[in-house]
Image (cartoon, rainbow, N blue to C red; front, side):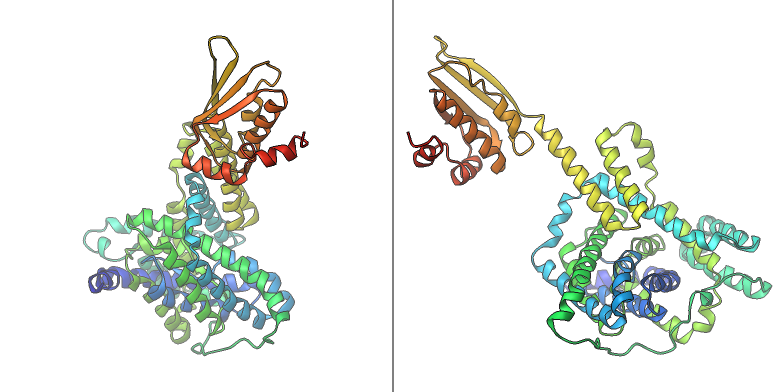
Length: 496
């Protein structure tokens, strides 16, 4: 355990500290912007980002992943803030954390197994588009100075790593922010800066219990929002974990991450912060800047608080163009460019799932809705594909009085009608044998189709025998079926 802790916290000290500093700078405008979206004071988002990052560094299941106030969560809480105010938002944040802890203990992370690869790719591409779109307001109706700074910033980000010696030591996004800030200060260019985003807090956060009545009425108000926040937060955090796993070739613990998100949100609600979750953009910045351990996440949150409270005069002069350049780099690096080339080679259903996830996510700016759409489409396509793998071979005995139907494949809700329609109920036979030794019954719809076929054949005066049931099929057929229960058959056939 000691070795593992040492590796996660102190295995990459220089890289984690430098990358954490870059992330802290990138978090400031994001947190302020998300606070504005949610309709609360900027310090609510900044305190949340500090708290989420610091707590998740200890309690989370994925080293190097950044959690903070996010746009997806801000969109969910807009109506609550508008109709009931900040105090109810803080109460909802506490309840969100509690729900996430409970979901973690019942194994909510297993739901990620239902998310197809096409959905993940669509989610990532949609996020890249949203990150880029979020920068457009900073590039609209501005002077040429902003465009010049952004282009120079991107040049530094991509070219600095090729500088001998120091290019591999210092993260290029951090160098970009420092150089452009110094340049603007010396030239006096009048461009939008971090200070223009909103007033930075000048005090440390304090313990703040929500000032709301502790009764059932309050619970009725906040529970729908808290449950939605809990689901959106976990979904985005799990997706981020998957992406960071792939980027670092390591494995995160999603159940621990779910519990950590809950604990972090409870802590955040107690210091006046809004609910948050993992941030894909900032997490990618962290990894691409050299962050690999929990120390990078802790440093990001710690530096964020120190900078906005004690160094606000310096932070406020950072040109937004520098941060826009960093976020455009993140957008370009996040997008799966290979997915465009693969559109020609991948199955149509896979492409539809990916593109639908992108379209819904970008159209609604709701990451959770996009993922749910992708998962539903992927499930429908899969069910349709699997249903085609069920077929039947038939043969007769020597005198054509006994017919055997030998089914092969999967029998479930989408193939149950096909199973039933295979039988020829008008054919005059002494006996029908239904051989399911190479078939599998998955659900009640499949059992119902079997019962319906057996009962109809018997009504036609044909003897029916079902053979070859495997253990799993036998269990579900015995539990829900009636074809082998004489008393139930009597009821169905009219008792005569």
